[in-house]
Amino acid sequence: MPSEPDGFPIWFSGVLPGGAVDIEVARALVLPTLYPYAKTMPVLADPGYQGAGHGIIVPFKNPTRGNVLSIDNRCHNRLQRFLRCRVERGFALLTERWTALKHTTLSPSRISDLVRAAHVLTLFEYRRIN
Image (cartoon, rainbow, N blue to C red; front, top):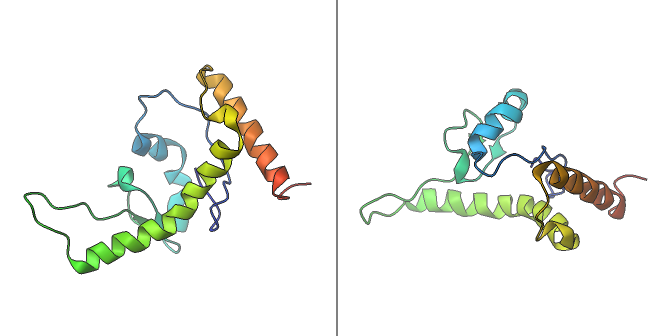
């Protein structure tokens, strides 16, 4: 879900099957459009986007065998978490405000319609559209 710097959601893709891996979906739907902008404006992503490409910044993984990350890498991860929490706000805006999105058993095609409707209503509620 791309979002504005304050975390407000901009766009949602249609709902995909539950077995779809985030990075594969991003490579198909988002990354080709995003790469030209990622050169000048870094994109923060969660650990699921490891290997997404140049300009996509993911947190450092914890080392194995009891080793710990360096203080610089831990600081990087903490700063990234702090900035990414705004994106999580976008999910919370929809799921906490619209209870129909919390527990739904609709088919994927119907969930897409429900998410789009919730997004438009949220845009209207926050006066982003008239």
